Length: 575
Ligand SMILES: [Mn+2]
Image (cartoon, rainbow, N blue to C red; front, side, top):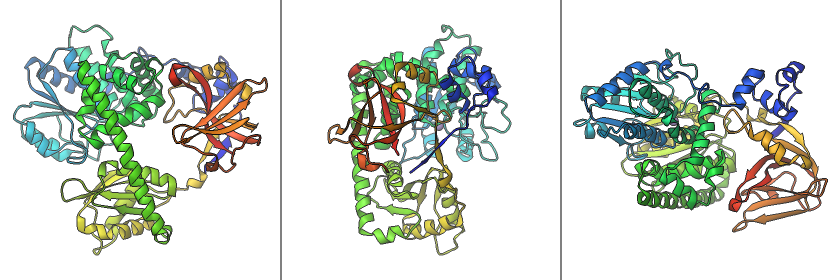
């Protein structure tokens, strides 16, 4: 369980700099690194007009724009090649909507299949469209696909790579490479998501293109950039904060039939849509398309203007998302059963390695995440879909980089066959191997784990933003906090400590019932509720009970259950 710490008090000069704001807001700003009056003003007032950078500051933007405008002039076939996740798909919608807005019909979208093809560019895909396509624009992928870019080039296709993933030492030999993480790119902000880069390209095209489009019309594309920015776990600071802020505003008003129908079907209030709604309701349904079916369905859901198609796709994506939940749930149960049966074996190992040729690779990452939470160890799961190769996903518990572990398997000597390929980040990754190598996988990962450096998770604590009383749970406090939204990476939701609270009632609610509700009265007798989804009293170090006094760690939230807005606490911990 995480420990909790308090921030140091604000220094006197911070109080002076931030004197325009109430004390609580001052401290929220300061503890997120916003220490000057000017920074605070910018942070609290995200501006489309002044908060975005000139797109032409991105290296190669001029070349990319000139080539696309030339293709449009010559009516060359343009192919948009995007990733299949909740960043790549909205990016593809941004680009496709741009072509639609300028009435350019000679374009198409290609999104690879998550498991039959996998992430990035593929030679076979390029072969399938090379005869008709003259220009390919990659979105949210391509930066390390040197071989495939060269292949496209030799097939007579000019390639414009737009990506935000880290480039390798050399860049692909493309016509233009837009990526603010390029070492030679002087763009002031490096942390855009893939759809953010796509939006910068559209901004630049609109500036140079002499199109008869109403000025500022591109703002309507920000719903897509918002979904992607919130889904791709990029920091919500600087230009990304503008994208997330306006993204939510546009989402709240978006007329995209697919989105409108999806939100309605889920019983959500579109005008009050929050960053959590995006993360927990929209993102999983976009991802369900690639995990459980055809990624293009998610693209169509967001891009379509056809009400009937929108209706069908919204239902379809929700259904396969339910199916996905069911599959992950039963897979996790199956794995837990195996782990209980062989408890001694697993207890002795620092990593959990399990697989079955019948398991579907597309859902293994989700299952691994839930197992990491349960067992507190890095988890590697493998399965197989079509083809010979075994494919797997892994998640870290935060003590070790899973990519480092996978890389270290190559140093174990001849008896242990290497992974065919692997990739990812510190916390998550994927791998592929030949079926024969499966018998050595657990040994290999255990040995590799011993070789790599560990990070100390014990030092990780959550910071309490402020100590509040139940009387502080008011719309006034909520209004103050909401100025800091949207929350996410690098701008965490304010965490509050409520000391010595005593619930009037402790109850479970929901279908099974699976959620926890604590009801308090504040000093004046006004009821205050604290809820925790998928929590039960026994989950906590201090088990809450009626009339028992404890300290509550919680965030403040506005909920819109059945379209009635309600202020409540969201339980984080009971200590
Ligand atoms: Mn991305």
